[in-house]
Image (cartoon, rainbow, N blue to C red; front, side, top):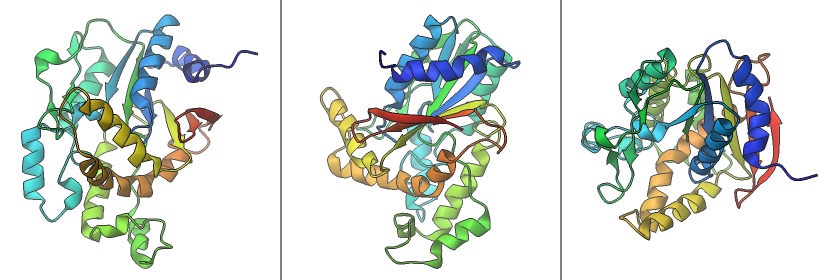
Length: 291
């Protein structure tokens, strides 16, 4: 029997959900740590869905980052919170732009231009592309793929968050989170609560979730460096030291929210809406499960 590709496995699970959905377009999230192959997989999945007769568009959480100027202002106004010193964490996205874009896709307000972000701008610090560079959608999609490193993450309640600091030695599974002041982490957790409102909550707009699950979250450092190596070949990009510092800003959210997302984003009892794809250190698929 011929081995199925990852996008074929996804389509065999996703197409029945899309076809049977009453509400269109159907919004499916795609989550994975940085460098895990989300962008490549999204392109392949979009092509496979279109080939199956499902008009599909994609939007990335990265595309709604704050502008460079607004990110600089955010960092300046939150100098005590190192997690907000650069783009990445919850709080560094333009939620108004995200909600407006998703709502217009939901209601079929066409034509629509989808935001785009240039990660190479300002020597790798990044900036939003000009509207003239944004892709223009003329026809109503049947499926929207919303991908991003934090898609599917949910905030912790206050008591669960406070218990993280009960143990301050190396046995604590949140040891990288402990590098930051509790008030800084609480601010990120509160920011994530705002994302639940109309951007990536478990009820709307997301109707299903695909999650790339690595053997180790530590792989993010190697994978992110590989991405920057490709960028350095033809445009300004971060140095290896900057990559480590950059990923360090994300890592507390991986420690806090990744396992919860992997175990199920949607309400218990509402099964089959999440597909976990297990990948090895080389990003090759080694298994999958539907939960």
